[in-house]
Length: 187
Image (cartoon, rainbow, N blue to C red; front, side, top):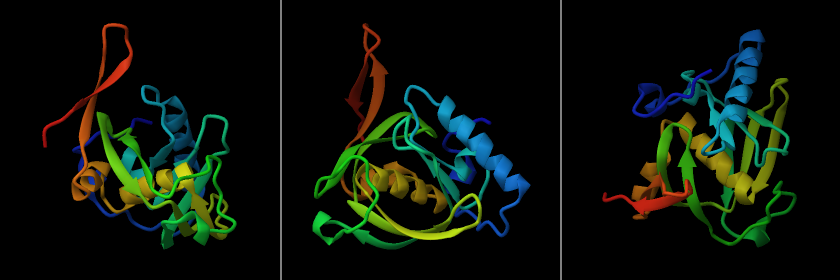
């Protein structure tokens, strides 16, 4: 399954809810996992259905290559948290800071990066791949990934967040040693 690149129209549309988790959805999830696992340079940590050309409210995340794959179907943000002290029971493998600021990229925007400030944590209601309903809190890097993928379901790509926050966009390039470097882009 190929990852769709901007400016494909499916990336700017609000995704449709999944009415029934059937064999087609299960097959789509399997294909998305293969696409995510196959992403390199950069390595992917999340993938939304619109990124594979399907306008459906589905995304998958894997915080690290060894982390379990998490599936989110028909997700809904219940609440955002910006301070650690307000959290209890949030899933996070990476700990966190008060402000979750880091260079963010996207598998659908090759070589484009930006500084995005995300909420430290998010409470999300969603269904898993078996159709079971959940309501959980996620923090740190996992919360960042979830917010990025959730934006995809609403037709928002991360450069919009960069520009809204008056932050900087970068283009990644390989230097003569083959290492990745980041050059500021004029906006």
